[in-house]
Image (cartoon, rainbow, N blue to C red; front, side, top):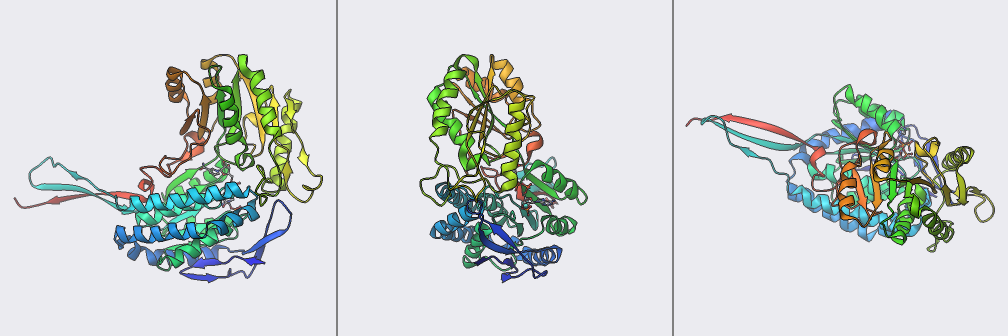
Amino acid sequence: MIRHRLFIDGEWQEAESGQWYDIVNPATGETAAVAPYGDERDAEKAADAAHRAFADWAKTPAPVRADILMRIYRGMLDRAEDIARAITAEMGKPIREARGEVGIAAEYVRWNAEEARRIYGYTIPSQVPHKRLHTLRQPVGPVAAITPWNFPISMVTRKVAPALAAGCTVVFKPASQSPGAAAIFFQIAAEAGLPPGVLNLVTGSASRITGQWLADRRIRKITFTGSTEIGKQLARGAADQMKRVSMELGGHAPFIVFEDADLDLAVEGAIASKFRNNGQTCICANRIYVQKSVKEAFVQKLKARVEALRIGDGMDEAVDLGPLVDQAAVRKVEEHVRDAVAKGARVVTGGRRLDEPPFAKGCFYAPTVLDEADETMLISREETFGPVAPVYAFETEEEVIRRANDTVYGLAAYFYTNDLSRAARVSEALEYGMVGVNDPVMTTVQGPFGGVKESGVGREGGPDSLHDFLETKFVSTVIRI
Ligand code: NAP
């Protein structure tokens, strides 16, 4: 049995409570690992360590920090298969997707290692002859990072790598369902020469651990990826001490297919966007709007592609869709489909839980296409986080932009067109942090990732990836002339 540990001040350890919890493989129902059930005592120890380590780490020259990050990057490549298998065993995604996730996770480390060397301030022309003005960019301080289960390694490195590059120390809590990939990452980081206390891992009670960090004045920033509901709670808590926050929250992505689009490309895009990670991504297509003249053809092509998807234990190399993360996730998908059908949607394919062998012990739901969806349905408002593709008909560009923007979320949006002018107009009109034009998979380390409205604040990755981990200090010096 794999036993994860906490990692505090450079030491692997058990939780103060002495308790453990089980991590269940959602494909088989078997226990994949156990992890320590930490609480505020462990969180405080981690914050103590991060606070102690901060002064030296912040002063460590940027090229030295960059070299350590590059060693972590290479360590991740060496152990890529171990990390991928931990992901699949704990949260179920197909092993091929898990390997892809490890690849991009390592790239976040490399990107931020490179960016560490480019933390520039400004020299500013003064308004008077006897003053010299400049800015310093300094790390914000110890940071608390909290991540979800759907990307158990790339969400870790997307936060931890820029924090370390900027000179921050980190206390980190992964999602309860999938801490295994993070645990391997911490081993790699320790072996790469990261000083004790710079990076600390605590698993266990989410509310008690993060509650402790919110109350601790030494923690200067909260960086969170997860649901909008929890993100709001954390942002309210952070406001008490005006801690900095970065919030990568939920989404409800429109995926628009105009009649001038390449329909086959759009169908492939819908498969990639909707069914990757079994629909359990914050940027996956939630509402597929298809212009009326091509809707029937689109639905038929989508049906054929969805029916060809292979479902099973993610460890099987041939599988396209693994299980959902747990039974609660299956129940949520069932509820959304039931509600949509009751309100007039038509099941084109799928539409049911898979509970016959070989799926009986896992959390499986058949990949589903719903036609004739409309905005009265739950599925049009809430994240389904499952393999359900609802298709909506629309008539005009103006209408579909209005409907696409009619949501509290603003993370990702997609559209397919071959009209250059339309591509420019629609990208500008969509109220989202990221827009894919004929591109269903836009996440890349070079691009700023993040949302507007209730999808969050801040951006991760891209040219400004260190920005949210740095303070700008203005220095004004009077000199004799
Ligand atoms: P979640 O329930 O919000 O959990 C995310 C993290 O918050 C986990 O570590 C969780 O710990 C912790 N947490 C839960 N309750 C908490 C509380 N009361 N106080 C403090 N921390 C708490 O979200 P999820 O189900 O894991 O992830 C799915 C959500 O993440 C979706 O909404 C998805 O859209 C969003 N997401 C957003 C992005 C993005 O970049 N915008 C990327 C990926 C996912 P436990 O696991 O221990 O409960």
